[in-house]
Amino acid sequence: MRKLNGIRSRAVLALVAAAALAAPADSQRGGGVNALTKLQPGLWQLRMLGGAATRPTPICIGDPAVLTQLQHRNAPCSRLVLAQDGQGATVHYTCPQGGYGQTSLRVETPRLVQIETQGIADNVPFAFRAEARFVGSCNSAQRPSGR
Image 1: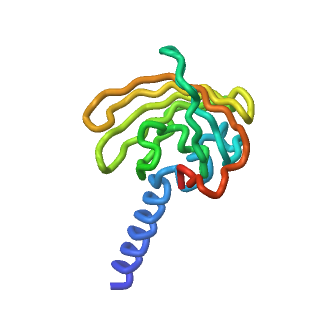
Image 2: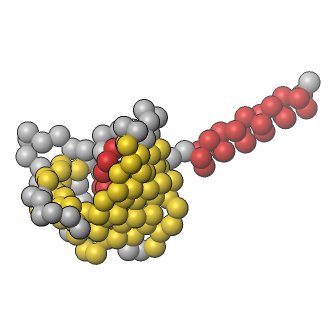
């Protein structure tokens, strides 16, 4: 019986360790993307690139990892970092309410990020390029995106 309890204990420890390793990286600031840790929370302006000229959209960001899933900004999605270096990353994400995407971003400076993303949202494909620029602090009326 004692040997059986030891086996059970090791099995439980192995399951806990596996769950910890498999947990989404977004529990840490920047979602496990090293380059995003250089960015600070606050008010950012998002400008779409490659199409007709559009006005920048202000976004109050609590966690810069939200830049990896702009199309699903407020959804609790799991993220998997596919590749990264000191300047950027490629991240795949999946949302439990449906939808997914893959985003590549490059941090040019702590105040400027280039973003390319594509995926499915509301059963419709999306693909766009954008530039995010830090502009300051969020005001009290703005609620941060991201956890």
